[in-house]
Image 1 (tube, helix red, strand yellow):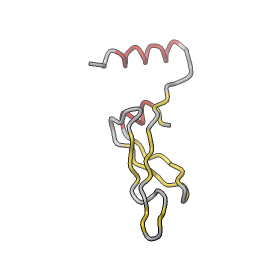
Image 2 (spheres, rainbow, N blue to C red):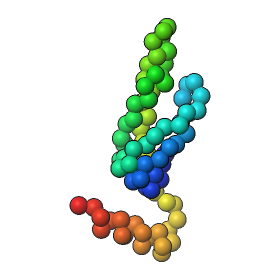
Image 3 (cartoon, rainbow, N blue to C red):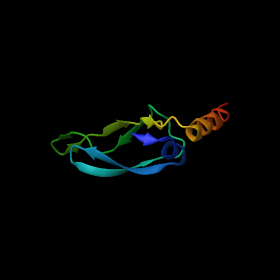
Length: 80
């Protein structure tokens, strides 16, 4: 899960893998539902290491105050 700001501007986020926690670079302009491939972080089969795929889930603020409403309305104006 990531915030709208993290998706828009990019971020370094911790991700739990079968082999422990790692930091993943989320590129600027990422979209909800987008998948990232983490090379060599998936299932190991002998000497081969598989890739782990993660799906980005952009979370919206849960607050319903006037400031949040105004910010969302301003964002809506940016969609083409």
